[in-house]
Structure formats: structure tokens, C-alpha cells
Length: 152
Image (cartoon, rainbow, N blue to C red; front, side, top):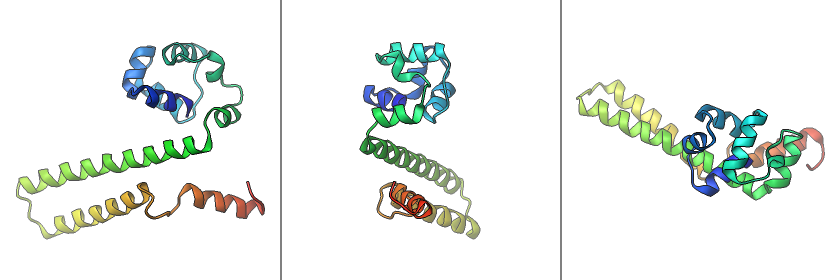
């Protein structure tokens, strides 16, 4: 999460950060998902992101991330990820619909398929923009608290 936060703060894409650090985009994706990085990768990222190497060390990642990223920052990063995913799905849907309908496919089944996918996108958008809270982080927290029988 820290690498993602610093990357977004600098306005860089994953590919741009990877190029500057001399690693692959896939490496950046793995690190942002919480996978540990090698010492060499951490040194390169620390240099590019202009942070102390100790902030990227894999000592106790959960404690480190909690100390560096505040709860509201974590929620904001999760929100941005959901919205980005929604827009990617929407763009894919619009391109596919344009291609199919441009080439004159008028099968009634095609309308049902695109209608169903469109409905799914509407639900995903409502969840992404937090208009409905189906399986949201708050729901997940309540589930954990119910299982523990106490507040987190």
C-alpha cells in the first residue's frame, strides 16, 4: 500500500515507476498487492520514491503499513481501485458493444447478453461509488467483529 500511495502521490503509472526503478511492471503490481520485494528492488524503489529504505523493509508489513497509512488513506486507496476497475469494465463494455453493433449483429440473444452485462456494470458502479454497500469493507469489519464477539 505504501508503494501505491507514493506512486499515486507522484502521479506515476505502474509502468513509469517500474521503468524508473529498473524492474518490471509485474513486480510493481505484486508489491502493491502486498507481496514482499527483494532487497535490491526495495533499494531501487526507495531511491526513486525518495523514501528511507527502512520504510520498504519487509520486517512486519502489517504494522509498518498501519503506521504509515492511516485508515482514511487505506479506504481512499481501496475506493480508487474500485472506481478504476469499474471504469475499465465500462470502457471494455462500450468498445465491445460498439464493435458488435457496428458489424450488424442483430441477434436478439446479443441484446440480452449486452443488457445483462450492462446491468452488472450498473451494480458494479453503485458498489464502486459506494451508493450501495454490498460486501463493503464496513460489512467485512462487522462480520469479523461478529465472529470475534468484540470490536476490532
